[in-house]
Length: 169
Image (tube, rainbow, N blue to C red; front, side, top):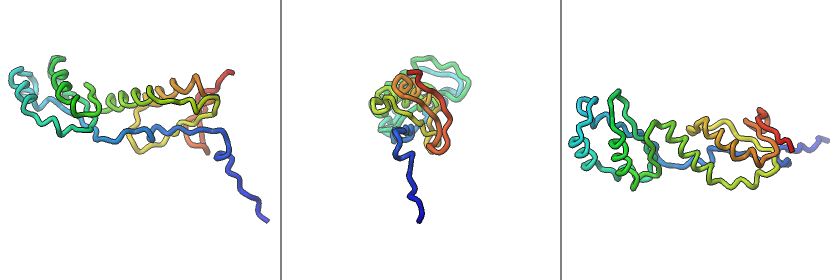
């Protein structure tokens, strides 16, 4: 007679946190202002303001937008701010920087609002594999929030984890 197979992981107090589960849906957009510069190098205020005024900002509804300039031009801060001011009523999130910074800011805010009391005094695995673009900084934000609560923190999958932290309680 065969022995019953017992799933010890399912029966343990082990808690898994998957950052991919809190990934917000919405298009990520890199808004490059280089096309609005004269010869992609000089910002002419009147022309720039005309571009901003005549642009259809509604196309960014429910998206996440990173505003940047991909050419080596001197762009005053107010130009980025002017674009941000137009995007904010439509986009879910606006940052001045690249797409990695955008994801970092998104995760910093999401993790900041998480209620992680269910992880108190529990061994926690932070799932590592993801198909969505989770920045490395998100893992640090999560550890910072979990460490005062968790009994231990590991990284990976239940069958193969890397220990990261163990409470000294």
